[in-house]
Length: 229
Image 1 (cartoon, rainbow, N blue to C red):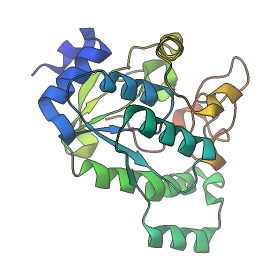
Image 2: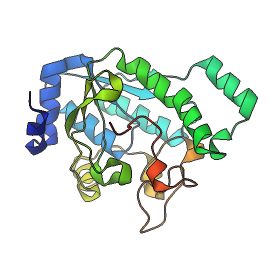
Image 3: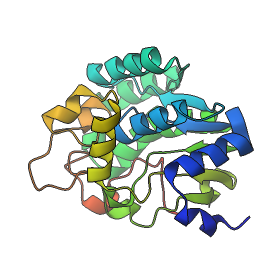
């Protein structure tokens, strides 16, 4: 299978191929941002199902939980939530406090590992492929994203990014045209939404990832879920 052949395929074609090839052994890793909501909407219009899961870090915005519930209700989907290890969180907060992630990149990555990466690895251990809402114009760390690629960071499982070549304008137009539910924070200038303490609104003209870990340089703004191979 030549994975480069998918670069000319539409998001719908890629998602239908994913369903046909992997079924529920493919999982959409959803943070319920705009892109993930589009993927849920697209999947609802195709034949077959995939698994839909989320990483509940314990520090999400209330608005994120609200859009999760709207998605569950509107599309009739089952959402599997993966939580951090309780002992790991208790040790981290007892030893370093509640905002250690702002003290250094190492501390921030430690928190991301406990709250996100470890739960992701548990989720992916049950799957053969995972779907994300990554787009190439989301920031410096994502410009080389392929639509379909082997993910060497997870035992060469297949990583599928159907919206890789979509622009922000395409995302916004799809949402408007198809009446897709979105996180209320998007209307408050939160283009990228993660944990509440690590996310802020952005000013006009700022990079869309500038509201994530805003105290760090742009080249470090990944939590580890999507490292470059």
